[in-house]
Image 1 (cartoon, one colour):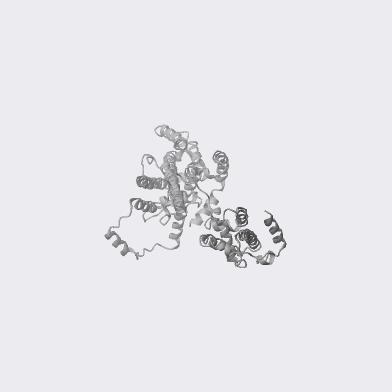
Image 2 (cartoon, rainbow over the protein chains, first blue to last red; image 1 turned 60 degrees about the vertical axis):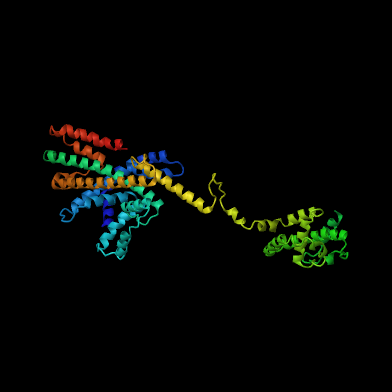
Length: 204
Length: 268
């Protein structure tokens, strides 16, 4: 379904894409002129990558499309509603263009869920974990926090400390952008819903 | 002076594979001290030249020569007294020649030229032998250690790794507000973890809000026809075709429109 969605993205966004592409090109060239040090390293920094207007525009438009599609397809829902959150995370991962570990992990999670239904197998090492907790093996403080951090960032459980820090910085920048876009979008849509609801009968 | 010149000429004409000095040197070996010394000089010259002849054509013998030189340098003390008297007998023996060379080295008075020549001849094999651990040094990057810090390869790698970690921690601290005041990895990591958790909560809250908005929008059919080409244009589309607006909503939507339109710039 993830692949289907990407195909739909391409098909349904052809018309608006033309407008967006023009703007994207102009902003990108100006940004590249500003940021190109000759090394190309400035563009790769997470703060730069996720704070450009283009990134926000791309993410917001993709999110809109995904939300509209999910609205059309699945309206009756009996299970726990985590769909919007997962959609938002997935679109964020797509916007990362596969360069980071956490984005690939988010997309893989979805693909894995669709292929095989989640069956919770009892962990074999569970007894050992209980014994460890009984023995009260206290790791150094930094290592404990590193473990917690690795659990927070998706797909970074067995990653070295160095790479974990890099992934975390990129993830934080991406999350900040996600929060800003979703805030704005919810406001717009709320206003749109309110405005159209009132003036819907008169205008159309 | 003269004898060495003569000897050089004679040696260059001679077959380089022949090591026996007796074949070349016409005079019989004598054990008198004066001649012995001269003999030592000549044999040293011979030995050194022979060695140079030996080393140059055959690179394979280089190791053997190196070992020989090492042995000879070790045997310096032992062969001091032996060199002059046994010079004649050891002519044919390579080891003997090396001992003679070591003997000549010890006889500093007369054999300076020979030493220079021998050292010049032995430069090629001798240098790597004198510093057996150093040829691989040329492949390494030479780093000048800071004062009070080790130059061990392990500690260098450790230092590089620590620098990378501190650089990334600084980047993270710039991202997370309020992390600049904290000193130390553990506390900074605490702040980072808290920040990520708060961001997760915000995303959850906003997703619920969006879902509510979605469900509201899906209920009213008028919205489905709304296809904003761009969220920034959406505001224009929403507010454009509605000239007659409710009085209460009018100023509110204007304010929101302005706020939303400018929020991206402000939020940067």
